[in-house]
Amino acid sequence: MDNVIIVENGEPMTTSLEVAKYFDKEHRDVLRAIDNIIEKGLRNITQTLKEKAMAYFELGEYVNEQNHQTYRMYKMNQKGFSLLAGGFTDKKFMEYKVMFVEQFDDMQKQLEQQAQQQFFQVETPDQQTKRITAEAYKMQCENGRMKEFRLAMKQADKLERNDLAELLLEKEVETFIGQPIKQAVPIAHTPDLSEFYLTATNIAERFGLTPTKVGTIANRTGLREGIDRIQDADERWFYTDGAVEKMRARLEA
Image (tube, rainbow, N blue to C red; front, side):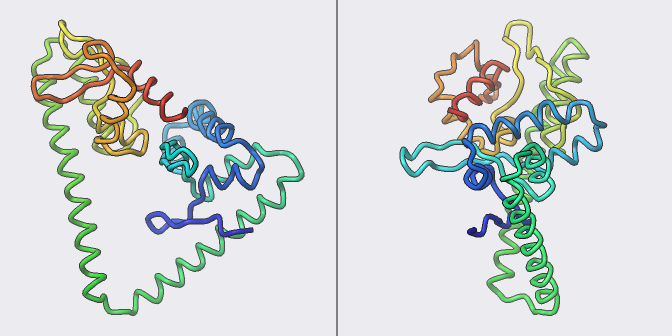
């Protein structure tokens, strides 16, 4: 068995592609199983546990080597794998379950050993440069989120109805802190414009993409202006719930 574990942000992870490969399943079936865990299986647990469980899975994408098209996939840590593999009850899967778990443990031990070694090592100039670059990028992302939040506050001030203003700010707070406050609901932007759900930045974080990629997918999907998406005075795009579902369907195709 090849190494099915990767390291993301210092944590051992595997992917839905690897699970589909070794458990002899169609990748779309594995995606559907994870979607069901996130959207249905976690529905009735407490909000605190739900937020923790949601962090077990991370939506990403990969390029198909045959048609060079981009498709979605999931990355998951050991806890996410355990939730997913718990639904694979066939006895023939037991060997692969154990092998996945063993590789998770082996990788975790390697990371702990590396952390101990690095603790006693002086940071090299190259390592220092990489660390500073990563910190600068993180700060840039946080500044971008703050800009989105400030724009949302200005828009909320213009709304005549307090409940709509509160809903708009809730969506931006969710993006800013990276956690859901509650399930998304439609928000009327102004009396003369259609309803919208999310900005490109919101959708990018939900699907594990970049805002630019969201715009590209929106254009390829043929979303209609004024119906599926709306452009405000600041030239920001707002996407309706229907538009988000159309983009999701294209990513899953």
